[in-house]
Length: 406
Image (tube, rainbow, N blue to C red; front, side):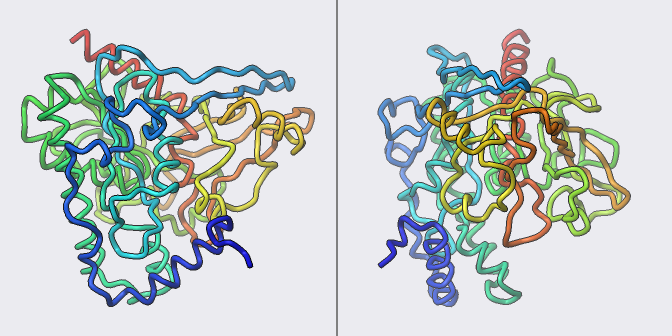
């Protein structure tokens, strides 16, 4: 008998099937409202100093050069950071109700560690557990129209947002003490944080001044075409320089020439005169720049089975070299191989276009995983953050320094 826990595909399939039977069941069973004074309701928090703080997991990186040589950089946690980072993870839970419960599984923990743990290099890290809209219901909705009602998903979203607002207020009341903060989120998490900026931060002069920046990746931040302010936010602009704070970093990634751009889910805005924001974290003023990838050898288990098989699973062309590399570090980088540029195509899609410089004489892999096998139009959504993670951390450092000086 196959153990579904050890087989991610069976786990995902069982979750979708079980969830399908629960579509018409009451969805109020997700959990009572969380108590954010309890450390158990945080994945990352300064008071959590043991292994149950996912931001303390190893962030070591093996960097592989074009000649095949490699070096390992150990993970680093700043011992006395000047500001805080508040993170909301993307859709990851495989709970079978519309909203997740407050007991995070490996999906949520691993996703937070992979996307957010590295921010510990520049800030104190806060990441609340919340009753998010689940991956299960996202999958059911993708199976066909009408399987999940708009009302169900709207209610689930409101529950998720209420938790994030409560967690943020708890952080402000108990941990902030006037410090600067940087918001970080991806996909559902970025959408929730965008609403937090709209409703809680923009109307409050003090909070506006405390917000160092907001890295809101993989969601629909809108701006007037060719402009940097307006649309989603009334007064908060997109970042156009590393010597700037109180601004927004937002992008969604697609591979150059991706056929999924014929019907993209990200990088589009339906309202005439507006477009999706795209800010390359290493080229905020525009143009092409290298992407400093920090790609994990292992994705969270459900995501792992949802990604198309491309490349060899690591930085090398030869899979056995990747096995040896994986024994040295949790993440890999390939300097000089990935590049990105914000582009607008003829259909008005505005996105971070990713190119991979492959060379048959280069011992490094010619391709890497990123696209989904089960839905179209998502591009490189699942690896949005890690494709530019090195750039994001450097930008965060620059923005923190600018904020502290001003």
